[in-house]
View 1 (cartoon, helix red, strand yellow):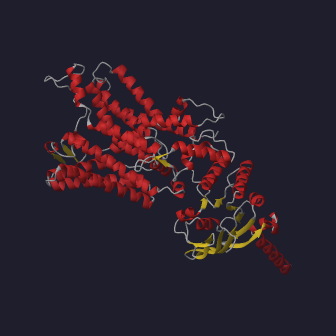
View 2: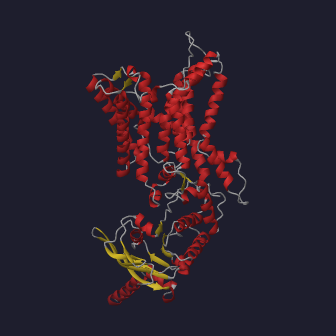
View 3: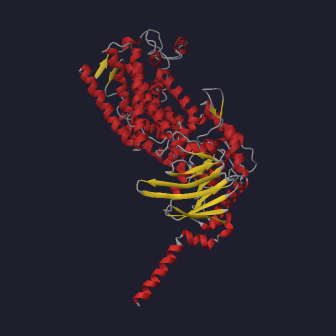
Length: 263
Length: 375
């Protein structure tokens, strides 16, 4: 029995002949933030979808709270507490904060067959939850479209936590945000982790990831370049790994070699 | 209506936060999608009150007349609005009306079915057609505009071809005699509150025929259906989980899917809704006229969509109201009847319809921007 909350062991995913993921391993403890770094095309989206239960891994296993788990659908992942907040946030701008917060999981009241959406209760919970993270929802019946990008991100995260997330998978939560908004969101992510959640933060922005992450997994061309504890790796090293820095170094050496021969 | 005012009230009552600027009920109302249609309907009544106030348009008979027309359109407009909020279109509503009509008439007249069985048959066919539309749109991911446009032609063609094949002509008369004593037909064919009108007649408050019976005999079934549907759908949208799913499915179907809303099922049920509404429309009209016509309902789908748009539905889905569509239908019904009471040539009605829709779309667009505008 390990002390990890969730382990993804040697996950591989193939699409026909294309190897989208190969032997990716990640382990998370409660209260930990693991940052998954990778450039475009590194396989981040495939990995997210595998974590979220959209794709079934072709190889490898997912172990959650010590038990091996197989997801047949995103709902299975959600049910055991792995909640994914996608980049589009699954928020409808034209709908109210409350209606978004409880979208798909509305609280009901009333007799059987005549159950109605308990809007009063929903309003109260939504305002309370948003208040806890310091977002002043002046009126929970206001449209989400009136909120800023950072507030929307926090709403989506807060919703996932409210509905029992134990592992939070965040897909590029800061990519569309300005510096200030991004820091608000990152602060909230740290706060969520400190309450015992395991967070997988997917990003290509090392500057956002480094301050908040406990460990870092770098993904490159479908393969993991390894997981590093924060103390073992510097920001610059991460950056160069992500950008394929080692490849570029090698290229530089090769070019020098060529120049030497030709001259 | 009562559900509506209650939900608006609860919204303002809820938040006691002192930072929240006190929002007047008026301001809340201004943000509602049906506002434009409500205002339009009031304007239309004021207009005809001035222009045609003394012509009999607003006699009991006249009122029931334009209410009947509004209600018929309203029944399909409400269903079209629900579907539009869910993010899809149904262009086959009009053809479904014709198809449902002959689904009632041919079994009843040519195959000797009891009328109630034919009516149930027509509604079963409606569920099938709606399901088929829905499953096609959901499974293929094609725009519903195209899928239901195809269905518009297929249904109309099948209606015409089958009717001619079976009956040798394009109209099926002779239904009126079957209505009496039928266990179901009365739901679609009986005037309600007759006693009120008899009483009003006896008090000489409304116009009478020469035999002493009132000219307006009762509230037509279309109006009862219309009001019932408007209340039911508004309740669904505002107060139920399914209502929230409809908004979510239309607003962002991927997002809704990701948080567990069964978008496919919601959309399919809404397509069934429009087909069933078309069948309610058809049943009422067929029983009223006593005959089914293969061309019945032609272009009704566009009128229904126009009423829904005037009622505040966005073409892109996710926003709108059923009660707004009901007001939209009242506007169109009132103008289409009222124009007879004025000196204006009735040819101008279509111009009005188009202009009204254009204004509504521009207005809705503005409202949407306002609703989603950043603080």
